[in-house]
Image (tube, rainbow, N blue to C red; front, side, top):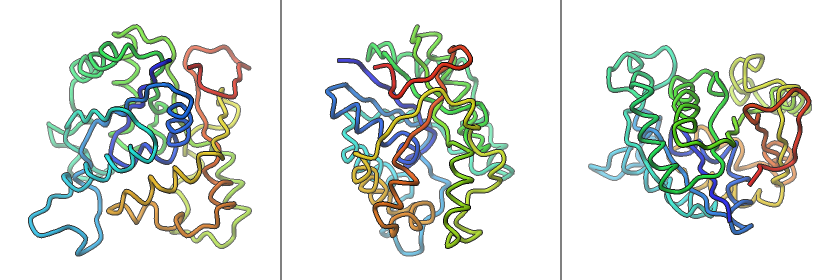
Amino acid sequence: MSVLVCFHAHPDDEVFITGGVIRQASDAGHRVVLVTATDGALGEVPDGLLSPGESLARRRRAELDASAAALGVHRVVPLHYRDSGMAGTDDNAHPDAFCNVDVEVAAARLAEVLAEESADVVTIYDANGGYGHPDHIQVHRVGVRAADLAGVGRVYEAAVNRDHMKRMIQANPAWTDEAQPPDVDSLGLPEDQITTVVDVSGQIEAKRAAMVAHATQVGDFGPFLQMPVEVLTSAFGTEWFRRRGMPDGYTESALAL
């Protein structure tokens, strides 16, 4: 049995780009640990969804637990940093925001989890955090350093396949401008930088269930929940990674668990 640790910025981030490999690893008998940097307290929420007196952070933690159960996660570890908000907002400047914390301090905390779990593999994000979100960029920085501190040699940068996304948009004219990801030309990684392509079509229902669990994030997941399963599989039935430290031309079809 190997131990896979997936490090994410907010509750719900685990679903899109690592939900399939999480379920796949769990089903294969590996231990999976999900670490979230922030509570996602600055996310948007539909009016009237929260109960009187209920905080968004509390609801999102409950949603995270439900999503983790759908994906077969064995342990959820929240680091409880302050959500930094979207890039360019005033919240980015808060001294306690995750994007502003000392990388060495945060990395030491994550490294403790990696050491405690005897982690074999860690997933983080690419250096641009997928789409430039300050918390996602910080996950990359902190994750790289923590893996180094804990001596974890197998580090995977989870990423959107930019070229695949462009093909999906071109092939689906029904996708409106609002449903398309922002600034596709800088989203994720180009295909020639991806080392690891994992077929997770067999885990698509688990990914859908995890999406449903994040009810407060319907703005992110809503357009996809109504897709026929074959379209959802086309969009999210493959997950892509860049394995750090590999030579040019290296490829694999699964994480090295």
